[in-house]
Image (tube, rainbow, N blue to C red; front, top):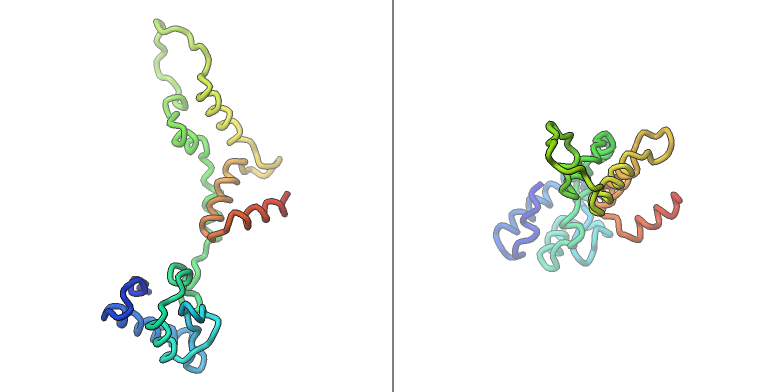
Length: 180
């Protein structure tokens, strides 16, 4: 469903056309006795209203900002299935290349093809490189014995889920405290 109309001026023709299409769709797929939840800034989807009342409310006060930018699940838009996406994230375990991208260390990850005999022996990694190699080692450490998933992969996926669902920092902290 096109949502661009929500952000237009409420008296414009495009807004009114989008509003009519939205109400027609919502009544058809989510209406109860011709009424739908009113997503205006005042009602915030808490009240069932007639299509005419919803139209008036949306013209006067506009759509609730959070709902306008989210999934219109109260009006027939389906919530995407993120279970498959989360499962796919856990299958992609190339954390070494992720770290190499983050640190710009692709040259250090590649095996040298030819050894230059005139070059001096390496003096050991720089502190920056040492930190990188420590992270690569930790990225390959299992989260817990036998799980097959690395600590870094778990954290990356956890932050991805946090972002996908719009979790606040306090929500994530509470969940981590619960797990701990």
